[in-house]
Image 1 (cartoon, rainbow, N blue to C red):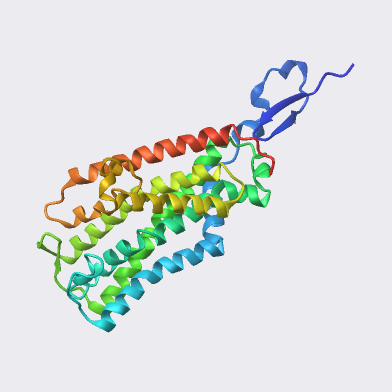
Image 2 (image 1 turned 180 degrees about the vertical axis):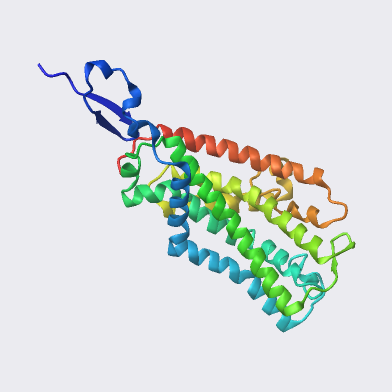
Length: 308
């Protein structure tokens, strides 16, 4: 009588293990293909190519790049205006082109950036399920945890690139139209061009960390549905609702717990000296939102019955 076949469990499938001779029957290392999996770097690069290769994601980056260009052309065309209209940095654009990037980040923060990030995060899992490729992806000998982390890392990369696109486009068009004149911080202290660029880089890092929390929320919502459009709407609605609640003074007691409450605190990086303590609540809030949402996504995806 022939020996019964043995099977090894990999994510999403049972794979038959080749029958071994009695002298080697207990050697687990004899089936390395089932234990080694794919290299993490290869998975990450593949996910980045897929994410940045999609036309809608490229279009979103193009829209983000257009925001500072529209602002710079509008200010150049109309000239300086008083009365405190528009973002706080708009009145400083004529003095230094670097402030175009800061004004554009302020304008894009309420809607354009959350929309771009929500689209990519919500598509991470729900998009695969909608296309019917998720169950085939899970047959690869890679754990669900590693797959989820790879997709989250790609979304974080896209988030940083989105913020950086606005900053770089803003600096380029700002220097072209307004030059690099004296840069005065919000506290009135003049700084050199190099330090101004450094401050802008710190702003980009702070905003990325805050927006990663939104990406984590999007990743969690993506594990709950097979409709990426519905997941995107839900994540964008979450961000907008948080901003609306944050604008109601009567709800001040819940403001510290809102997702978007500390996003605009990056202005502290444009004062002299920098009040790093004022940035801590925003970073802690982003960390908590990211940890809770990512953990929920991991728990949901790890136990999800994938049928599509």
